[in-house]
Each structure stands twice: as C-alpha cells, then as structure tokens.
Length: 409
Image (cartoon, rainbow, N blue to C red; front, side, top):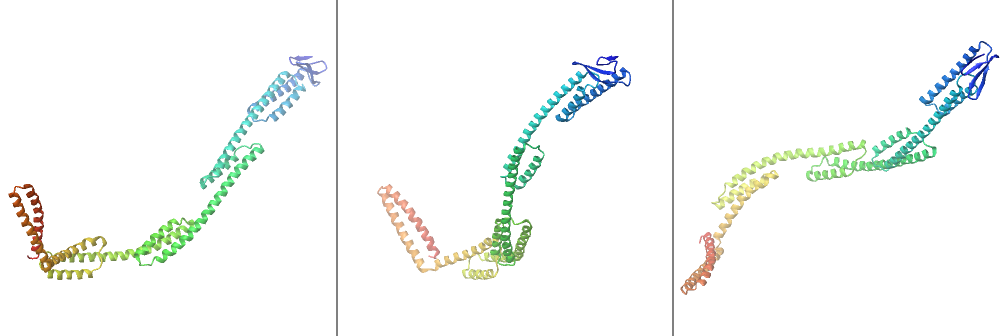
C-alpha cells in the first residue's frame, strides 16, 4: 500500500483522497505501481488548480460576464465534487467559494455601474431634450439648425434607457426638431414671397430708371432718381440670382443719365466761367462812371454797359452775388445823383423848404428874445428851459438850411 498526505492506494489498487468529510474513492488503478497511480491523480489535481487560477485571473482582469463566470465555476466544482483527483479538495472548494463571492461582487458593481450609467444617460438625454425644445423657438436658423444636428449625433452616442423612458424622451426630442423645421420652412417660404415681391417692385423701378436715362430734364429727373433710390432701399432684397442683375441695370441707367448731365454741366460751367470774365470786365467799366459829374453822360454810359451785360448769359451761381452787386452799386449811385438833381430843380419842393426854413428862423429869433427877457428879469430857470428848446429848434433849422442849400437856395 502507498500513501501521501492527500491520498492512498490500497492492496486492491483502489485510490482514495482525504477530505474533511473523510476518504472518498477516486478510482481504481491496475496499470502500474501505487506511486504512479497517486502521481497520475495528483497531476489531474494540478490541472484543476491551474484551471481555477486561470478563471480567477479572467474574473479579475477581463470583462467576463457573471453568467459565464458562474458556468465555468460550476463546471470546475462538478469536477472537484466528483473527487477524481488527489489533492487538497477543500482548498479548491474554498477558492471556488471565494471566486463565487468575487463574481457576485463584480455582478453587483456592474449592476450599480449600469444604474449609474443609466442615470447619467437619462440626465444627458433630458438635457439634450431641454436644449432642443429651447432651440425650437429660435430664429437663428443656421446656428440653431447646426446645433440640433449636433445634438442628434450626441444622442446617438448615448446608451439606451428602458424602452418606455427612451421612447418618451425621443418623442419630445423629435417633436422639438420637427417644430423648428416647420418654423424655419414657414420663415423661408415667407422670405421667398417677400423676395419675389421685392423682385417685382425692383423690376418696375429698373424699367422707370431705364426709361429716364435719356431725359434732358436735368433737375426733375435727378430728383426722381433720388426718389427711385429711396424706393429701391425700401423694397428689400430680391432673390440672390436676381438682385445683382437688377442692381446693375438700375445703376447703369442712372450712370447713363448722370454722365450725360455731367457732360452738359461741364460745358455749361465752362461757358458760365467765360461769361463771368466778361461781366467782371463790364462791372469794372461801369465803376469808372463814378463819381457822377455829368448825369446825362453817366446814364448813357451805364445804359450801354447794361445792354451788353444783359446780352451775356448766366454766370456760376456762387459768383453771381458779387459781380451783380458791383453793377447794382453803380446803378444806385446814379439813381441817388438823379434824386439829388430832381430835388435841386423841383420848384415846389424848393418853396416848401424855403417856407420851413423861414418858420424855423422866426421861432429861433422869438426864443432868443424870450431868453434875453427872462435873464433880464432874473428868471434863470425859465431862461434855461427856453435855451434847451432853442437848441432843438436850432438843430432843425440847420438841417433845413442844408436841404435848402441842395436846391441851390
């Protein structure tokens, strides 16, 4: 008979293994010595040790599912319980029990992790839904549309929830996207209608602008072009494919008109500049008439200058006041000379002036006598009052004498 700490072989070749529950029959060995029998069954035990070690490593270092791990443990436990090996079977059972506990712990961890991931996914999807519902009311069509597309990609990358929760959240998410798309479609449909209205309005403006491009009614036509430009701006933008073409036609028609006007105005400005030189020469000639010494000759000379002046066309507007002012000054001087001559030669006016002078002289003489009398009587207050009155009458007399002198009196 042969034995070791964990097993023995009896005289009949039966192999036993020692366990906490007593010896268990491993099997029968007839092919060799008892030592060989024990060595064989010990190798089978080592095979189980290796198999358990590998399973322990897989459980700790891989994502082996709890179900598959438990199946593998059960398979090894069946082999241990069958005790067809020689070795410390209780140690193997203890390792398997610990491995079961580890698998259960990992199962619970994964359950908690899945619950945590589910909560995170739910929160993430609820956040996406909330943002999508806010974006559904946005008028920032391009930015909001791009953001919604980005949210869809984010949604696809999140894990699924339970079917009911996932479907409810997706329904809200999808509804928000649809609402935004509907609003955007309605907006651009309205915009297209507005742009079509703008195109029609601008077509009419272009037609009028082109019709006016040949006008030579410079002022009213230029004013109308300004009105057309105001109407153009108020019409809004047409479709992109029409806007540039319409603008080029509208602008081109204006350019034709204003180029023609500029050409005409340039010729006119050159002519008016020449007219200004001629009128300045005539103004200088008129100014030489002054001072008036011979009224008849002065009138004749000014009439000659004025006839030539009237024959000359317009001068530049900004130069007109100055050159016309010079002529008016000469004309006023001649008129004043005429008025002075008339006063001097008018008998009725001379008689009135002489009569007024006589009356004032008599009043002055009377006041002078009254002053002398008041002084003689010692009434200085009265004399002073009369002298102040005398000063006023004397001033009127001096003025009347000057007017009479102008009449040659």
